[in-house]
Image (cartoon, rainbow, N blue to C red):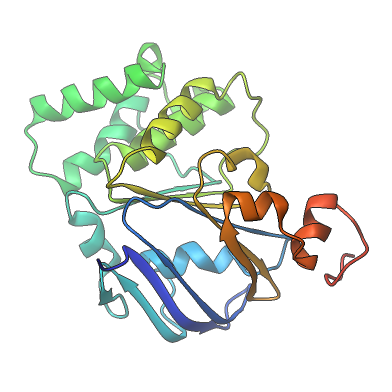
Amino acid sequence: MLPLIEFIDVTCAADEPLNGVSFRVARGENALFFGIEGSGLKSIAPLMIGLEESYEGEVRYRGAPTRGLDYLAKLRHKNGIGYLHGDYGLISNMSVEENIALRLEYFSDYSPEEIREITGRMMRELHIYDRRAARPVELTGSQILRTAYGRAAVNDPDLLIIEHALVGHSALDLRSFMDMLRARTAHPDRSVVFITYDPQKFVDFADAFHMLYKGRIVFSGSRSEFLESDNPYLVQFRNVSPEGPMDIP
């Protein structure tokens, strides 16, 4: 079976360069990318969704090269790519309901009645239905996160990318969000890619772990290997230690 997303010897001179990065994420697999600041993490999502096209190597989505493929063309597919990033990017003059429904209005064939039903179900599952008429400025931080997640996941995408999205939130405030995330990562035909500086928050959700340092993958392994490996980069990261192969300011 073709991988859902694949990097083949990708080198990119972006703000956080990548140097010869290769990996694949299978359909139904949940992958976690982590490392220290400046490790290259910021380049992963833009390359996956087609916003960064200046690179060598190849990025493939469903087996086809993404270079030159319009980002919106991928989003227009009913089960395309969902993207939740740390800035959230909600539209300030739209309500919670309008923000979540926007993706369905632009990239689906659902009727207005079906969109209202799907959006309403999503808001109930995220416990923000009572805030459906509120604008982003009227929401708490966790409500903004849940609204942004709802917008990214409302069309049930094959691939959901979650990038630096849980910073500054308490575990209790995130309960409904994490419940939905757990259900999604258990789906056999859906994949989630996590990009984070704090992999422990997602350790129970991910199947594959990839650590970057200076634009290269320095560790790849399963959940048990992530927790137990004696890889020196991983050991230094786990121990929050200045001693090891990584230069920490």
